[in-house]
Length: 72
Image 1 (tube, rainbow, N blue to C red):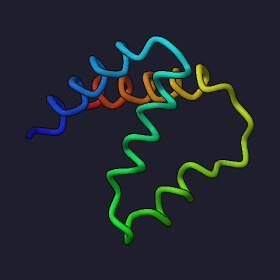
Image 2: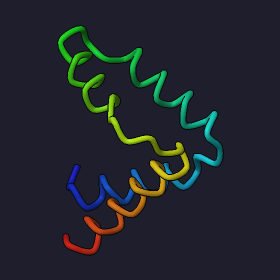
Image 3: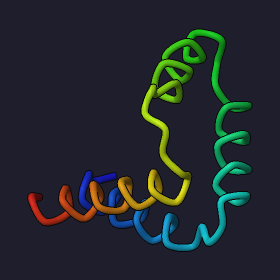
Image 4: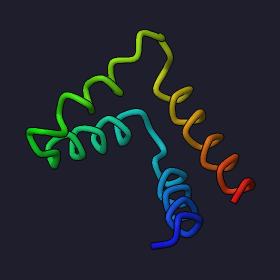
């Protein structure tokens, strides 16, 4: 799949996540799908030292997706 189409699809799906609990459920589901070799890297990405609300993190992801979309 072309990167631009992929990111547009990601954005569409992120917009549908309307609550912190939905975001947590998605992250849990994604974590369950990881192979043993991918788990440590996932935890490093998840273990940010910055304390932000899930809503703030979701907004950062959406903003990043929009930035990428405009650059491509």
